[in-house]
Amino acid sequence: MCSRSNFNYWQSKSILVVDDSLDILFLVEAVLQGAGYSVRCAENGYIALDQVKESPPDVMVVDLMMPGLSGYDVIHRIRQNSDLPFIPILMMTACSFFEVRQESKGEANGVIYKPIDIDELLNQVSFMLQLQQKKTEHQLSSTFREKSA
Image 1 (cartoon, rainbow, N blue to C red):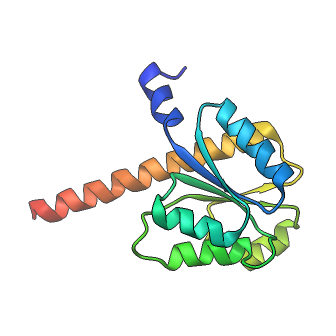
Image 2: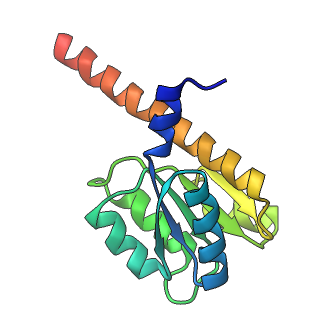
């Protein structure tokens, strides 16, 4: 059972959902908001990158196949930008596992397949938040050790 303070910690986290399908955006937004998360949406990769630069989210859920700037391109640009903090990224796709592994080159932290299973989405987002927390704790620990040396 979660303690109340831990529950509030997870619920205060922001999630950016990126998909060119408004139906998918509305569905994922409703599910995540219903779970208490703060959710922002972007209809394409360019809008997503602008939002990330303006205010990096705690987690991103990114569709891979979008016109213009694909989800792969969005993820790659975020990973290449050293000015951004670590952002766990969950890919959404209807592609096969093999296609995703080959194209993503390990830059994403997880995959959820369409049609979306609501419980799986919530579990994956929770896992992404835990990943972010561990990464942050590791960075703080490393910084503390450097200053103590």
